[in-house]
Image 1: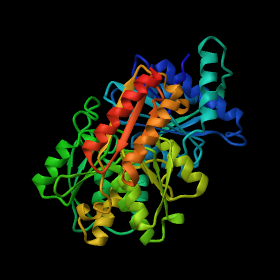
Image 2 (image 1 turned 30 degrees about the vertical axis):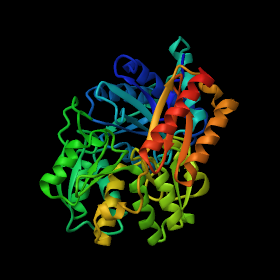
Image 3 (image 1 turned 45 degrees about the vertical axis):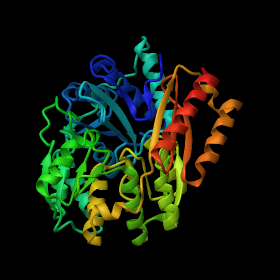
Image 4 (image 1 turned 180 degrees about the horizontal axis):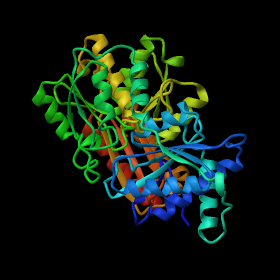
Length: 452
């Protein structure tokens, strides 16, 4: 069996790759693994289970709840809430486990299962690996040890989760949003109720789009992966800014009052300066990935803020933050982690904090985001090559060295083997787009000849 867990849980086409049987089996396996690890010692275990609005989430939720309860875990069903809400509630309720059913920004037919450990943090890689092994062992015939009588888990709805999460978001805001007009694109997803409620309670005048989930329309031409409707709505309503989430609302991208996109790097730059001003940016450091734009690094250098780069994936950004005690990190895609207030990327929190900076500073989002200039970035995928040899090809190393000398301090080269496909990604940044394309094309040719 290939590895089930990716960087963000188990994901696939619902009822094809990800079946009810798999969801149930993984949930039972997670309960057994955590019990063996001592997580449940001395008390009756409790799990928080939430989902996004996908139609498939209805039967997958039932399977997960059945699996957990059959393994002796009490379940609190919080219903349709964002991924960061499930993480937050797992922590604040003292639960032993959190489960979120979502495929994030993927199309509606997909779904996924993501587990959170006590405290609302993502499970460690070794625990995910153990869950996968135990699941496979029992899937092929080994019987489970099953509680009976009063030992089985009890299930109840926890509708208070909505208000508790929204109250948390409002409580951590540094200032109100009175006077701002904001368009919110909820991607017909998990934040369709939460985000408008939070922004309204914070004092903003809001216009909502993509806020009518029907189980089938999640991420369909809207949200953080399709910004055209948000841009049009911001201009139509004369809004100060627009905020877009993805299906499970762990991402946030923005649009300024002119309809210009503000990506995750720019959001990080704005929040980093705001947090430093408040004394909340520990060690004056922000964590981003190796794919963040060079313009972000140049801006942080100019502002005296240290940039630490992590591998691609918000879990690796979070690991770096937790290990060194940093307060802010994120990805160009809009996963932003504010560790003092969230244990995972939180799109609603990020949008609120961004709007709070606009309100507090009296400056437009366009002006605030101009602290960094996005340098042209060219990405070429080179397929059908031996990705394992990227780090030890002398021919490739020579070509990269020549390219870096040509680009100088205002350019950057990154060769990254894909984690899932037989290809190598060639990324080049430069002050001039034509130069970036030229260098990227030459390097892609070398990758083909050296690794093909």
